[in-house]
Length: 632
Image (cartoon, rainbow, N blue to C red; front, side, top):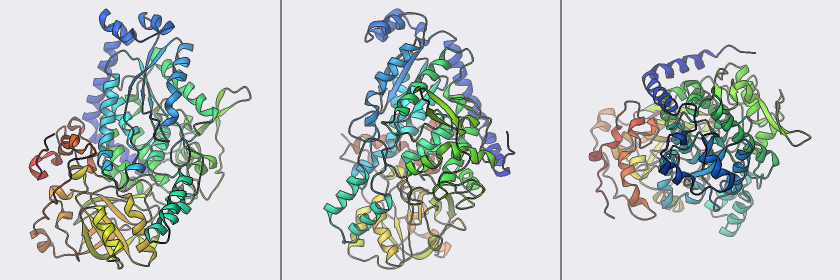
């Protein structure tokens, strides 16, 4: 049964469609031409004999014969496997299982290439974090390289975490004519509760717990293969892939060792082969359209998802020719209710969310409220109603999809749209004399949503932590940390500040953060105006803030203001940039990306051909970077 669209959803979608008309048409034309060039024959049949021989050389047995023939699909696997990280270690044995399934349906699957997968949990507060955001674009390029051999008729993207999924999607969209599935590995089982973990971190920051106690708490929290269980960027990715129709229905939060997980991977393989050999098949570029992108934003807002997606969704959309803006997020947030409470927005984790009904229940209630587009193409077929079903194994062990329960299994974790936790979504856009920023409000208490206090300015996390340890910040304060934007140093997450800021808040002070950097998707309780644009190194207003300036952050009104006479503030000379650290931990190899990266509100990607105007953004102006190119 169809439900009338909410007027805000309809208006925003029309606006996105209108502004994307030329870029989306150009994108669809490109993928249509690619599909027409291939025709109905396997892609490899267009290769010369020598080219094909190189493509077949590593094959054995029946795969060699199949690849040498003119029949049967070839499936490219792009994997983010490594055995260092819990979220990606489960992918070790996926290729062999996928290959076996492909043979059963007359196809050949092979690992086309690997992509890097780094962990923000390991690099928090470390130099490696300065490569994190850029790794998304490296992953996109690596995906394109993997598929560039032009022997594939379909693709499977094995990935889960923060930058990996957005990079895989962007890369796959450059081959948008190929039927493609995102294949997740699922979360680890629940360990020590996120609330208990957060309290130990605060105790350590306050000197009430030692390293041994902190390490024991962390190891009890992150304890086995699978994604971390808090609702940060990694699990926001998984939920979005469900709601945008890039997974099979309900695939996001099944554990790695659950037999259902293996069945879903098997089914995803069969599905992309089915689409590849069908005359009526379709590629990922036809799934990721304006309506799917808006559905992704709605799901993010309804669950209080990661602020990182104010960049990642913009960047993924751009790869499909869709121009999404922060204003779209903001307008939708005013209309989309908050329906889930997962840490840091509540004590539950993604396993509790999944047990309560998970994405199938979420999709059902949002569709009933007119807050999702049902008439979309998905991996599973036409219509988002398919995603109100959940996957189960029947008595014979076969995968089937059944209607999810119509009621939430736990109203403290997941609620219907008629009984929300809050009438509006978890993100806001802030505007004012300090520029353009975003704030996650779903975990911020009402009494902390407006902060007005003197500024204390830093240019890195170390300076802040030193001042905190000297108790110089024991007062009402707006902490300003600048020179953390994409062009400055790759926009590292500043999550290591969270425990100390939480201690100040617990001591009874009014505390807020303003930065042109990022915060972790797991951050929440401290009001934080992040992704401030223009960034400091481009002479943005944040570069003119001085210690003692009074700043007012008002998440309710959506404003971020420095309360200084406007003429005086405008007349100030922007602060001289502190000499950047451009060497060590591989940073010297990323100078070109820092020079080319676009604005945070345009996706903070390095691909000028994906910018809304088809040209590099102002952040690519080397004259503004005030740096010398390093010599290796």
